[in-house]
Length: 146
Image (cartoon, rainbow, N blue to C red; front, side):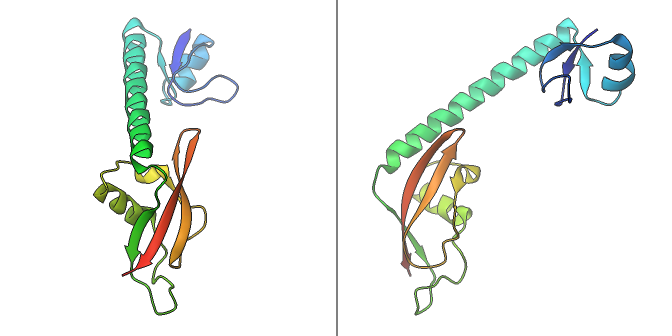
């Protein structure tokens, strides 16, 4: 019996793969537990349409990421935050704050693409990373007190 896996199943296959399993295992275990669907022509068509749609969405995200990186260039991004007299921030700089600053500059990235390796807690020059899949781009920040 052929089934389409909806989740990764150990020693059987990964999500969205069509695998051949014994009929009893497919009908009594995989399909009732929601781990698989029967590989009917309708389900196979839905799977291929779903995979095509995900590939298009990924291509769109990749294109937006490349445009964002090009738009930023090598210039440091200035971030204005509240700080005390010792140049320490009242709260560590978060990805959401950085996302807001980037949107004001006309750069569109997602919060999940911003990676701050070490917490930014003081005024000065810092480095964060924009990550998309295996691609990682360093972004220089100039944190300035208001």
